[in-house]
Amino acid sequence: SQTIHQWPATLVQPVGSPLSLECTVEGTSNPNLYWYRQAAGRGLQLLFYSVGIGQISSEVPQNLSASRPQDRQFILSSKKLLLSDSGFYLCAWSTGGGYTFGSGTRLTVV
Amino acid sequence: DQQVKQNSPSLSVQEGRISILNCDYTNSMFDYFLWYKKYPAEGPTFLISISSIKDKNEDGRFTVFLNKSAKHLSLHIVPSQPGDSAVYFCAASVGLTSGSRLTFGEGTQLTVNP
Image 1 (cartoon, chains in turn orange, cyan):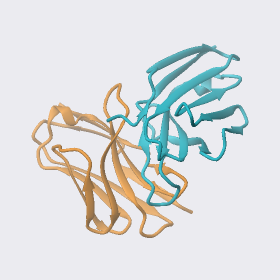
Image 2 (cartoon, chains in turn red, yellow; image 1 turned 180 degrees about the vertical axis):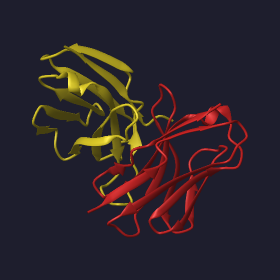
Image 3 (cartoon, helix red, strand yellow; image 1 turned 180 degrees about the horizontal axis):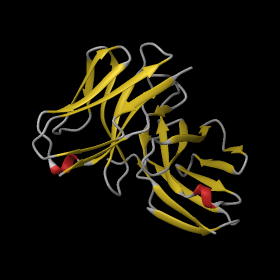
Image 4 (cartoon, one colour; image 1 turned 90 degrees about the horizontal axis):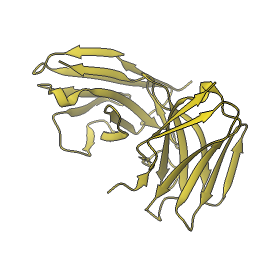
């Protein structure tokens, strides 16, 4: 079956610390993968998408980066977190009939 | 440029009554529309969709209506239940393939009161 895993579920990090969020999918090959952020009281903002290994497109300029080292692995990173990076981060993959989302990571930068 | 807009950030209804969530879009190329439901601290889950060749799609208590001329769609929930309380996102895409990207609205917080 096709599943998507995202971790950790919650994370509290100090300002200036690095970040690494991981997303993996199972049961499919060469999926289109996405990172979204939902800031408090806001909608879903597309951060990055990837159509294949090493292929990353950024939607908005920001303090974050993404990488896709393997076909079914998508990583969201930052070298130095800002307070404004706090939010709920979601990984998703495209199934041809919409997206399937991971369970999300609540990031709080303090 | 917000191509998909949900102008009501929140909606409150009584249990058993109808909930109507609205969504407007500007891109006339959009031909596939979806609604997602999101509980706090969880990822959104797919609820119902509609293709532009139809004007209505029904699944149990949920019905989506599409008015292409007005570039407007709505989600009706009848009867509303307290468990329906969640954020509802409208989304649109051009085409329906694994490469189709979804554009989301800002979401509407639905609260169903017992």
